[in-house]
Length: 432
Image 1 (tube, rainbow, N blue to C red):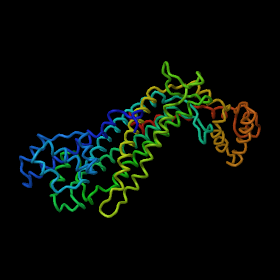
Image 2 (cartoon, helix red, strand yellow; image 1 turned 45 degrees about the horizontal axis):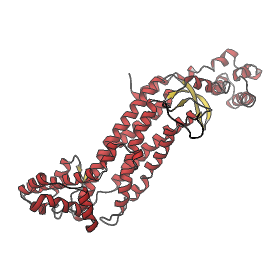
Image 3 (cartoon, rainbow, N blue to C red; image 1 turned 90 degrees about the vertical axis):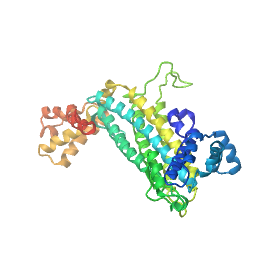
Image 4 (tube, helix red, strand yellow; image 1 turned 30 degrees about the horizontal axis):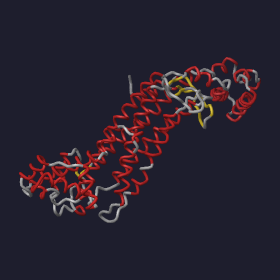
């Protein structure tokens, strides 16, 4: 992922320095376990910890000759450890190091992603409660439907992202497994104790059965969850973009002093951050399909998964980490225009209350078919020619033959639509 869309904390997880440090810890802990079993001298394990060093440039130079990254690392490590290095990597295969390292990196990445989600959830909850009763129009198919509140809009996005957080927490545990089982996963040349020991020391769980690689269904689930979270972010971003349209202008991204919206038109205030988030969501979801395809490998192992994971693993986690914090900032600083929300609600002359009139007529004994006809007849007149929907209904003798003008007027109370907001908030945010 390019630096423009990277936060240093997440990018550092995928830097060679962190990767090789994890490789070293895996190998060193494995030596400790082998020493416990009497397979290698205890002093050799101590030497690995005491003398173990690596240089990224040196590893890269060796790999240019060996064409094998793990061998290059072990060669560089041996240059520092000395004779005791012959006991390193006893009974292990490259995937034991690579897959266990990836599990650690995904666990580290998950911790940052969960922090980002927590920040965004806090922002959404704060702003939702701030606008608990801020009345606005709800839209279906992009067309005015019935009144709602801006707080409910934000609460809906909070709930979706809270579900995403729960899924990510579970996926974090599912992907954090360790495999130190040797060639084709049979433990023929290494005791299962080594895997259990390394898993414990690295904060992982031992993979129940690995076939030289950790099963990729775990990774498929993990990146699918990232894709779902990204889609929830895009859903919120798209809502904000629509609300910022000139004709709507109910909310907009904060426009900083000195910010420029267009190189050509000085008046422009564009929703660039949420447009950017829409694009990043596409990048993150691009990891889902290859992660699914990586589940299928030849027999006990091939490396068709390896190259694509080296690309989408860092890219998807870095992009989502950046997106979460960018969206949190957008929500924290979102500019809301309640007066425009009210004006838009009233733009159709009261048509948004048509269902209440329909129900009032049916409650008065009119068949649903006839009631719908009466309400729609007046509604279409106002839709096409403008005017006041309530006045049109009160002037329709076929309507007032069944419902009094006072009853009709009561149907136009926006409070009718907000009376259960508190109950919904209690469901979403809990009591209190």
